[in-house]
Amino acid sequence: MRTLIRLEWLKIKSYKAFWIILGLYLISMAALIFGLPGFIDWLAEQAPKSEKIILLAFKKMIFNFPDIWQNIAFVASARFFIKVILGFILVILVTNEFTFNTMRMNIMNGIERSEVLWSKLMVAFFLTLISTMVILFAGIYLGFTNSSNITLKAIVGKTSFIPAYMLEVFSYLTYAIFLSVLIRKTGFAVIAMVLYSFLEPIITYYTPDDYDRFLPMNAINHIIRTPNTSLMKIKTPEMTFDLQEFVKWDDFVVCGLYAGLFIMIPYLILKRKDL
Amino acid sequence: MNTVLSTQNLTKKFGKITAVSAMNLAISENCVFGLLGPNGSGKTTTLGMVLDIIRPTDGDFQWFGSKPDKFTRKKIGSTLESPAFYPYLTGAGNLKISCTLKGVDYSEIHRVLRLVNLDQRAHDKFRTYSFGMKQRLAIAAALLGNPKALILDEPTNGLDPQGISEIRQLVNRVAGEGVSIIFASHILDEVQKVCTHVAIMRLGKILYSGKVDEVLAETGGIEISSSNLEIMASALKDCPFLLTFRREGIKFILTPKPDADIHEIHEYLISNGIVLHHLVERKRSLEDQYLELLKNNQ
Image (tube, rainbow over all chains, first blue to last red):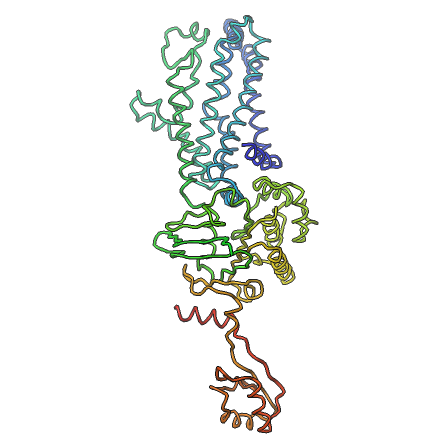
């Protein structure tokens, strides 16, 4: 285990592309979360008076404990657009091992085929942790500066969205590993990853509604759905669609199963195929 | 003697093509074992299988007499096909990874880089290396941590003549330290110079396997020449010690009878008034053997 961690660290430590993409990811994520209060202020300034009050109230509510956890987790996962950057990192790191033939080299020099997978899963977990830390710190900072309700109960309430966010990001990264091991070529794997994100909504359209949430991307995105915060209740009391207040355990399980599948398949591929 | 590597019935099929067919090898300790064969004869596939890179279709193999695992592979230094390293890392950075994989101390890096004359470029990125330098880095990596066995797959590929001779010296030196070496090559001359044992492969099969000395032992005839070739020709016709002879330019190539001695032939020629200015016992080169083997198995 320590060997694998040191190994991956040596590989990424001096890998400029890795740090640049990770930096881009963190910047866009921070910009999105921390830019939100400013963005709402800006909207409020532009808006007519009557709307202004609502928007400012909206701002207050978004960052209110405990709803803030769900809100920023939702914004950060943003369905696709930001997570995909982390996905690219994993695709690059895994397909590199194939293009440089270094996976062969690693195994020849004394690790098991399966350990190649475990070490990449560790990288995935490490990236998930970094991403979650950003959410955590942003939540604490924005919550304390904006929330009107600062009691311990409020602060820890809805923190179940943090592990939910972790699972969401980690599952997405196992999906990236799965595609990389399956396809082996960086370019094709990236194309497949992006293309499927556009393809699945189309598949969803033709799938009976009850089964939509069992499609892989839906399953991953469904853990954290459109927040049903107090404000939503005020603004749209008549709407009953896909809004969520708490993480549902069955969403958690479906997503977890996909993560398991996305680990199992590359495991079998690596175990059996010629490298 | 202990066996380093043995294979039983080792077979690899890629679709309809049989790359390696029912290979039985037994490589004993302290030898430099040459795996000789033309391109596509299955050398790399064989080495890939014993290094767990390629899954055998059938058959078995053992390293050091037991079933191989990752700990066995840590004791084997290997290069396979073209050098595989991370292009964005320096030579030394790449060797750190090899050290970590093998559980070898980083202090080894400088030593092996000096062995292959790469210490000057240790801190340059791998992608800036020439092919020869990449090849040398691969050999350096294989030498990390005093391996018990060494697999070198065409290690002199892409090297200049000086580099080739350096690698040969290195192989000889390492072999002298008691490391068993498996040396794959399609260059005969190289195998002849470096190896103690040889297996000749073609189309996934071993055609011949034995000691290099023994292959060379069979004589290829005696070469002689003198100033008057006409007189020599008529003398040779009556020589009782010869099976046959033939003329090649200004030389005659004699095939003596099995029990005949060069001495006797020489004395006979002198008694016939022929003074030689050239006499060489021709060793039959591996090349002759090799080409003959390939021809017979066409």
